[in-house]
Image 1 (spheres, rainbow, N blue to C red):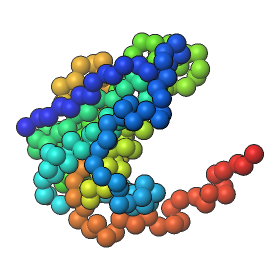
Image 2 (cartoon, rainbow, N blue to C red; image 1 turned 120 degrees about the horizontal axis):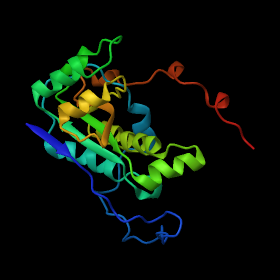
Image 3 (cartoon, one colour; image 1 turned 30 degrees about the horizontal axis):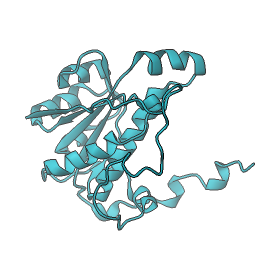
Length: 217
């Protein structure tokens, strides 16, 4: 079974010349679920790269929930460049892992994940081609990173493990998932239940101390 999830385009609401949304207007964003019992900072601290997965299938409702989290991400001019391919078919997953990753890093462990989410980018003319030429900032890459992080944090909340894999052959993976050439695969994210969820604790030494990273003015 191949399931390609494609997000729609909403109205552009915060580019120059357009009406700004009122942050106090409760009707501008959908309400999802009840108040969170886990803080965002706790989810961020708990989220680590998972490379050992159980074979248990991931319920489609959970997949839709993490995709919804990604869909709600902000983007430059609300262009929403992200596209998603949700790959559950075993043969397609095998082709992605065995043929779609670049050589030099063995990532056969990704075959154990019951789901591979391919996160792709579809550029718009003004926001993604003309604007970067003026500002020097390639906005869709920023947008894709935000959407992907929404996805993996939502997965963490559901007890799912994830791992970002960017060492890929974009054109080949695009063919495997059936995307047109206008959509460029950017990253593959294996999704599944960790074999050792208790090991999902990031050692403090793996991150630089805040004082090395921040300049207070």
